[in-house]
Length: 105
Figure 1 (cartoon, rainbow, N blue to C red):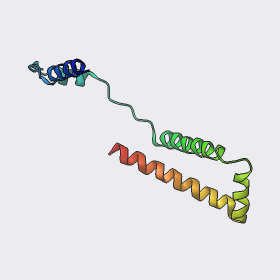
Figure 2: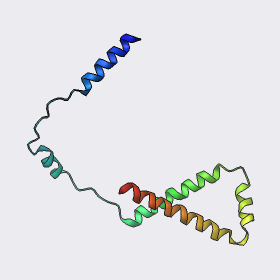
Figure 3: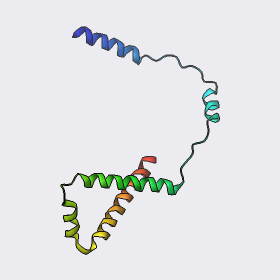
Figure 4: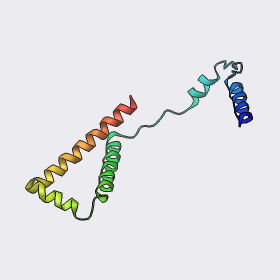
C-alpha cells in the first residue's frame, strides 16, 4: 500500500512539473481568424425550442404524479384552472429564460 502511494506521489510530482512553453508566433491567432463565425439561431427558434423543452419537462413532472392526482388538483383550482396552468407555465418559462441568460453571462 505504501509503495502505491509513493508511486502515485512521484507521478503527481512529475505531472506538476511544467514543460517549457513552445513559442506560438501568432499561430493561434491565424487559426482563429480562419474559423467561420458562430451561427446563432433566430430568436423565434430559440424561444420555440425553450418552450418545447419547458413543456416536455412539465409533462415529465406530471407523469410522476399518482394517477388521477393531476385532475384532482385541477378540480381544487376550480373555474380558473386554465388560467392557473397558463400562469404556472409562464413562470416556468420565465425561470428557464432567466437561467439561460444567467448561464450565458
